[in-house]
Structures are given as C-alpha cells and as structure tokens.
Image (cartoon, rainbow, N blue to C red; front, top):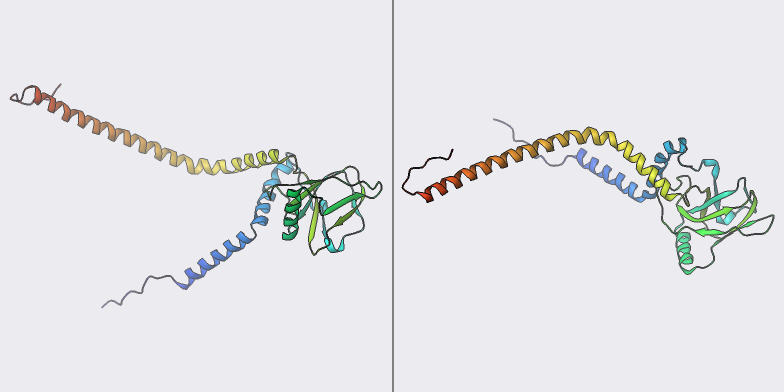
Length: 242
C-alpha cells in the first residue's frame, strides 16, 4: 500500500526566496536614483577612455554642509561647475524659486573682485549621465571665469551640497547619443545570437503557412470545378478537368 503524497504547496524555502526578491526590489526602488547614476557611470567608462566624453573625477567633487560652510572655496581651474543636492526641502525650494524667477538660495562671489558668479538653473530632473559621485541631482550650473578663491553663501540649514565639474550642461544630446550607440553595440551580439534562430523559425513557419494556404486553395478550386461541371450537364458523369 502506497503512502499518500504530500500537498504540493509552497515550501518555506520558496517563500523565503520570494520575500528576498521582494526586499531587493524594494531597496532598488527606494534607491532608484543611485542605481540609475551607477548605470550611467558604467556607461561612461569606455567612452571616457576613448575621449568621446568627459567625466568628473573624485578630485573634482567638493562636499559641504550648509551649516558649516568654509569662508572661501578655492577653484583650481576655470570652467563650468554644477551644484548637486539630495535634500528634499532644498529641491522644493529650488523648484519654487525657479518657477517664480526669484533669487537663488546660493550666492557664489569671487573674493578678489567681489563679482558674483552667474548661476543657471537646471530645470531638468535626474538623468543617467549625472555624476554618481555627488548625491541627488544638479540644481545649478555656474561658470567660473578664472581660478581663485570664491566665497559661498547659502541658506543655513542641515543639508549637504556638492560642487562638481560640469561636463554635462550643453552636451546632453551628445552624451545621450554616445550612450545609445554603446548600448546598441553591447546588445548586438545577443540580438544576433538569440534573434537569428528566431528569424529562421519565423521564416520556416511562414513557408509552412504559405504551403498550407496553397493546398487549401488548390482543394477549393477542385471543389469549385466539380460543382461547375455538374451544373453544365447534370446527367453527365463527372470527369475531372485535365
């Protein structure tokens, strides 16, 4: 006599695996911005070494707490820089000021001349080509006309900002095109490997469908010819057409 089989319900291992996958998916969703920028950093690697695009390096990043800003910030090179933040309140303040065309919450002044550096609002959201070395997304882009010491004044609040060399502003289209071309080249071998057998099967199925359609059409024509011959001479025996 055989023993009764156990119910094939979910086992503890399967339930644990499902919970682990759900937890990983939730973490990735909560850290989606960082995941996107890390993917962009991976896409930057080869084009940056080929000289197709420029990428900010760790030495190009300065992080500052708005409650303990330094008296002077030294820029060793002229050029464009971006101000990043991940603070939700600062992002909301930036959005409100940008829409109302109000003055910004950040003032950058050249110490030697007292001239303010012109800040340009970055109206877009986070993109895959934003620097992964800085938290959050860029809110300002500023052109530093000459190297030197600049004073930094900002809203006094417990928040962190990062200033990064800005190789993105004005080059978004070119960087996007390089990324798309890189992804296409990376996916091409997989498309050929998996797509060619699928294409052959699809062609074989099409040929089989055409052959089947021709057989059905031939059978339909044969029945039609038989009916026509009987209508012409109902008493005559059926003779198939040659």
